[in-house]
Amino acid sequence: MITVESSILHLFESYSLALLLGALMGLERERSDTRIAGLRTFILVTLFGSICGNLALAIDSSWLIIAGLATIATQGVMVHVVRMKEQISSGMTTAIALLVAYLVGVLLSQGQRITPITLCLATTMVLCFKPQMHAFSHRLEKRDLYAIFQFILVAFIILPVVPNQGYGPYLALNPYNIWLMVVLISGINLVGYIILKLVDHRWGSPMIGILGGIVSSTATTLTFSRQSSAVANISHTAAVVVSLASTMVLIRITAFISLINPQLMEYLWLPMSGMFIGGLLPIVFIWRKARSENAPRLESKNPAELSQALIFGLLYGGVLLAVSVAKDFFGNEGVYLVSLISGFTDVDAITLTNARLSLIGELGSVQAATSVLIAVLANLVFKLGMVAVLGTRQMFRGTLFCFSCLALPALLIFV
Image (cartoon, helix red, strand yellow):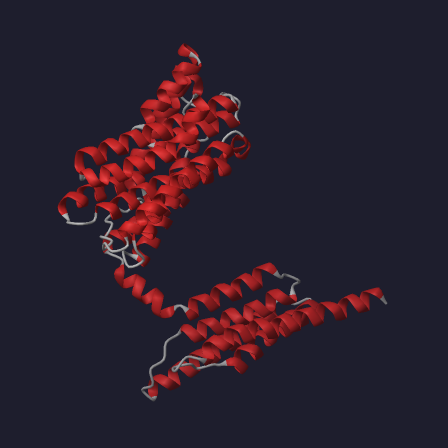
């Protein structure tokens, strides 16, 4: 009796979800002017997939699923051929979507839930955002596509074959771990870069500052410091963008540490929360003066380029080795000195180094957290010097005010 009830419940869930997921994809296709299938067709195809899957389970034969898939594919091809003969515009998108709908139904019959629902949502989004995807593809330059291909090379081809063992003094250099950090940094930077390409400068200085902090706060500071001197009346905007980008670095650091060594955040959440709040408050004040100014375009190199990845890998490996040597010869003071020097050029490398060394027990948690804060403060000093040399006096005053409020909570801890 229990087996019968369970079987009936499984069929009910399978067919109900098939109906709903098929309707979701069909509703989107119903809005298309050149559709070859609409709401009813997608519902029926998903139900057909679920029926084929359940029958295949009942008679223990997977050939029934393959036959059903071949049937849907054949019908799609036939409709496409007929429309071409009648000189009616017709793409293959809907035909492929019907195959996905069929397979969603099959997966539901196998007792799966998360995978078919995810596939359905992803397919619907791809179908729905066709204009945006086409517009985005046209905005990408050829070098951007090459860089995306290079990221795939870095993440999925090179990483699996890199040796996973320590080399060099103190066995501090593990090629696999170094390259894994390269993939992590390149991936996050690439996501920010793509979003920046999408929103451009039309969303105003706050959005540019946020995305600039995700991609590279140092590059953002360099760009807007130069533009504040070259373009009239954008000093307040430049100060807002640079300060917001540097504040967003705290979110970036938090994400890295949370991925590698979440326990380290127990020692950092309080000072970094204070810095984040302290950094935002003056930005709101200055932004009121910057609303009337036009937000200039932020130009940034694609961070997924292979040369960028190699440079960061060398930098990260160098910092990793320097921290190990400094700790052995000079103790805590040596680690702090390396953090200070590294922070002037790049916060990511020293952050990842401290998080990893703390995770494996080579560095104390308090010592690692202190080193991260030192690197962040050093990086703020470096960027402020950049603004002083390249930017206007008005931008420097605004940036100095924001950076002082941003750094104050960390300085209070050291005092």
